[in-house]
Image 1 (cartoon, rainbow, N blue to C red):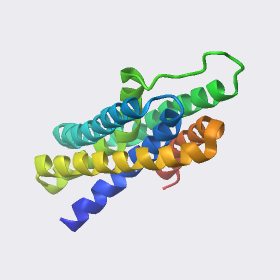
Image 2 (image 1 turned 180 degrees about the horizontal axis):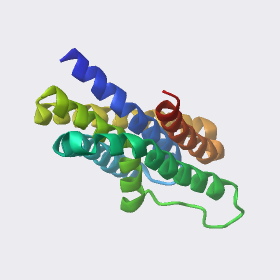
Image 3 (image 1 turned 45 degrees about the vertical axis):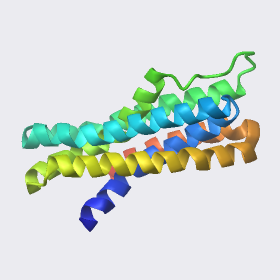
Length: 187
């Protein structure tokens, strides 16, 4: 149980950091009610994808394990690099309408990018014979709770950083993608 909880916390850390970034961004762009709704939506999506990916990995089993391990870091890195770069570009561009909606497709892209590692964890669960439904539910719930916390911490930092929050958030996303990439290529 403790090992599974530690895995769940570890898997939720990328989603937590992205939720902080979203919270920083959303602070200046949404009313309090909209902020709460957006936070619940993205936290739920992140939790859902973190719960689905281990099940998917479990079902794929050993057949695709080497392929998944070969590309998961590339996919996460590229998605987070694109999202982070776009946030930075929109923050520094002189455009009148710089607001990037935290819309459904944007949130889904973030959820996929932050949950790809959970796919590989699912493969390892298959090899260990773990209870995949229980494990996935714990991972999803942990991620949901960490994302809610991250959003509100991001809101607090967003009020402190004001207009630089979008640049800071974009840099954080790029660094998360780079961290994922380096962990998989250097280890």
